[in-house]
Image 1 (cartoon, rainbow, N blue to C red):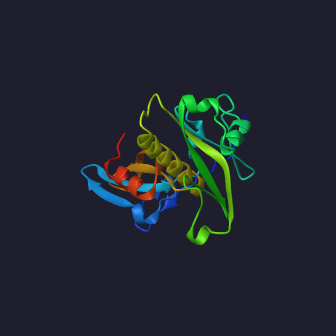
Image 2: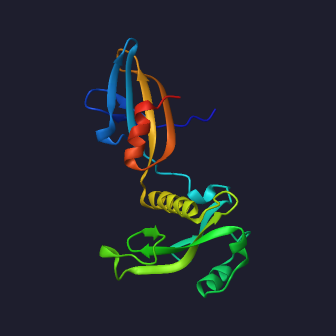
Image 3: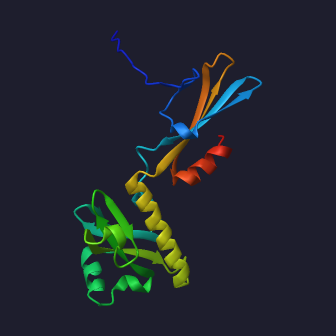
Length: 202
């Protein structure tokens, strides 16, 4: 029989609670219950799902840059994007609202629907080699399609900057020994994740 040594990482708080994950310190709350304790906290999601993994073809972006390359060749190819930027009509315009996508590359990647970046971003590597496509069938009006596109860009920016979190609830007995743990991942934005944590339970 082969025996392997298994090491489990635990994070111990100053009050003696052992946490399964490394908590974001300011988010830890511990509540006394009739059976023991319940601890809640946020965790940095180090392996979030990419927005590109969403199979919904009604709302997506494409971008062609060495620092950020996202493609949907079954719907639109790089030449279509080049033609669109060149002022030509492309077939995808029949089914999609199309918005220009700007990309700022400087110690990371930042996306915007605006045509350029201002302020501290001025003069850095700004590229215009992408588009956001929003299905007209689902978003009939262009203003609503624009809001959907902005929401998608914000989701991508959160993903690219690591602003994604997991909510964790851990249950302990009266001796502070953990008896159960629940978690849910992929919450975008720190403030939004804190709101979700308050009511989180499986």
